[in-house]
Amino acid sequence: MTIPLLYIYGDDDLMASRLVDRFEAALATELGLPLERFEVRGELQGAVDLAGRLLERLATPVMFGGGTLAVVSNPGTLVRSNATRDTVLRAIASLAPGNALVAVESARSNAKGPGPRRLADAMTAAGGRVLAAMAPRPGAIGAWVESEARDRGLRLAPGTARELAERLGSRVTDGDVERRHLTRIASMELDKLALRHAIDGGPITPDDVRGLVSETTPGSMWALTDAVGERHRERALHALDRLIEATPEPVLLAVLHRRVIELLELGDRLASGASLVVAARAMGISSEYRARTLSGQARNWTTPELQRALEGLLELDAMVKGVPGSEADAAQRRLAFTLWVGDHARRGDGRGGGPG
Image (cartoon, helix red, strand yellow):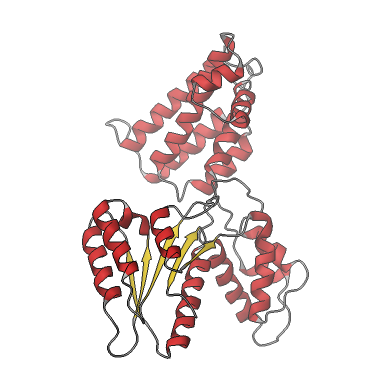
């Protein structure tokens, strides 16, 4: 018998939605009637009202027809205050036969478990399950495509899954890359490829992928700031190109500004005789790997070069904020970002001795 409580966490929207659908189908089969899906999103504003509605819907016994399947996304907002948390926990404890609850948490890619433990623990204590919905890692995208194709009865020629995976970003391994919609995009691309072969019935080939699937390589802030810090101009421009359309300009400014400041401060501390461990600790850097990475990048710059880069970012900031005399349209601002990266990520004649 399926226990009518399920907590899903992860970074894969398609997998999460499929888990909800399977859960609903299993309940409907056992109950003999379809459930009415009640989908809501938790928000801090209105959390009290939403918690009350959940209690009312879930605690009310089914009189006629199917029960209620409440699907709550962003559930953490409902357990932040004592009042709403107690209401939601009471709804779980008083869940009427025929009703069901699913909580869907959008978690980080490296999450080891649910975020709001109080809610997940209450659901498991009542017999419910906790399931992870994690997007495949870069090296596993091809295997996911092959498995999905088999489930659909599609035939893939050798190399097809790898070609599709590469076009979806399998070579981008940075930890901050957004992969929430990766499998949904892959699924839609398989739909498109399947239509092409619906008539002849032949296998889908790598040439089909190259002809029909656009490259959607995800961008990475880490890739951009590391390329700038290492002064790999072409790599930095490529990373910027992937990010600039979808990333707010103030965010780009903030991460670039932070990296330049970090390189200035770390270089200055090291030049003053501090050890890397002491300098990193003073800057609040706890990761030895990150400290060594920044130290290596700092050696690519002189202090005047970093100061000029910082001045360029201040000019960009004025342009983004529309300061009088610095107004620019979107195309001009994009060009300005590109010129900044092109000018400052290029290795200068004075590099090699670190800031000083």
